[in-house]
Amino acid sequence: MKQFVFFLAAFLVFTTLSQRGQAYIDEILTTREEVWLAVRSAISVENIRSEDSSAYILETRWIEDIVQKQKNVLPSAIGQEFIMPSTVRRRYRMTVQLNELPTGTQIQITGKYQERAVGAPEHQSRWKYVQPSTEDYELERVLFFRILSEMARVRTSEG
Image 1 (cartoon, helix red, strand yellow):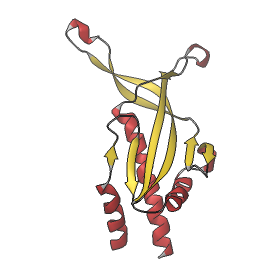
Image 2 (tube, rainbow, N blue to C red; image 1 turned 90 degrees about the horizontal axis):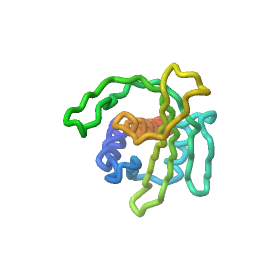
Image 3 (cartoon, rainbow, N blue to C red; image 1 turned 180 degrees about the vertical axis):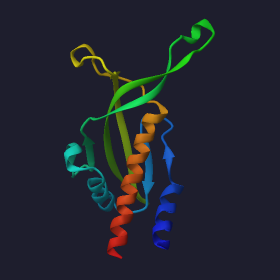
């Protein structure tokens, strides 16, 4: 148990959200092969769209859900903002890329996000790419922690 806590704490120290706002980037103090095995275990086979094992890149299929978002319904140009909750269908696709570093492995998780109206007929409502919100970026973090959990599970079962 102490090894698991140390293992998790070591990774959390290096946790950073990219300043570019485009990807979740972190450094893990282990080999790229070990992280790759955890990535493959954390993402179910039916959710994998493409995979390049030699380049250590994996892309998921579109995953759909329904979420509550805060939408600005009045432009701020009139001097007052009015934010209203809105329910939307969201779909997202994650790309995981691993890069070897002298100190370990860099993991980069990038999401693509689309939304469309809930309840509208499919033929009348198109998916639109959207600028990710805080809730969307949280999905990248959740995937990262699923990968860490999978690594910890494997290490615990081995030792």
